Amino acid sequence: NGREELTIDDTSFGNRYLGIWLSAYPLDETLRDKLLGVR
Image (cartoon, rainbow, N blue to C red; front, side, top):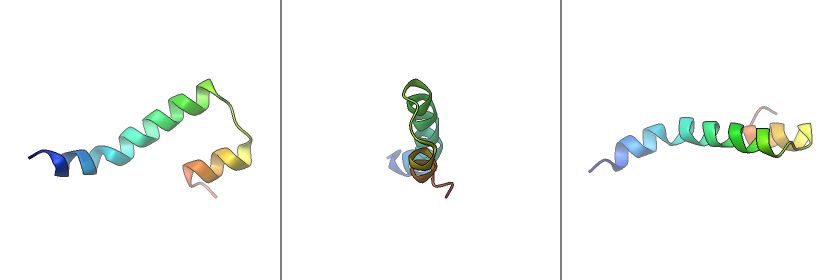
């Protein structure tokens, strides 16, 4: 089954989706950084 591949690509897909979502709905920088795990 391809579940393992999905797990491996889950992070990059999530980051890509988050980037698009954050671009469409700008948030407070602190909240954005918290969501992206920057801080």
